[in-house]
Image (cartoon, rainbow, N blue to C red; front, side, top):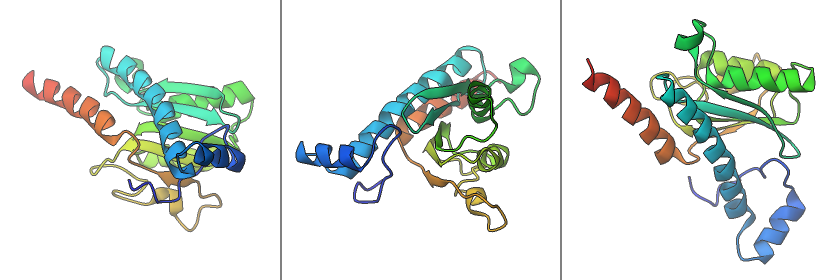
Length: 185
């Protein structure tokens, strides 16, 4: 992703933070991009938990506007025998329990894989401020690859979204998992 694209400040950061970063030699966009990478590394750590358990390695975080992690999740539908136990759903549910509210205003969903239709819908209904993801999913991604579900006109909430954060690392984790599965067939 080009750094000259407008990149929203990460949780806990604001315009003053961007100005300080610029004074230090980095543009606000470069600093914001680096901060989103830090959050994505934490989501990748969650994805590795799924990998160790034999699940598709997807991890997610919900972070509030002050930069506090409110929810963490990793894929676990096979282990839990629950089709909706995607990383994003698990992180959103934990954040909701933490806040005692299903509305996650001023919160951000950070996930290693572009959300599917179910997870995109959950992000809309949770009223998250934004969705940040790593790898694009050309087969089922519903932020922009297959459907722009976060931008559907009939929704009353439209979180901003940005993909490609640590895309190579996120993609390699998924590709390695599926290569191993194919090798064991």
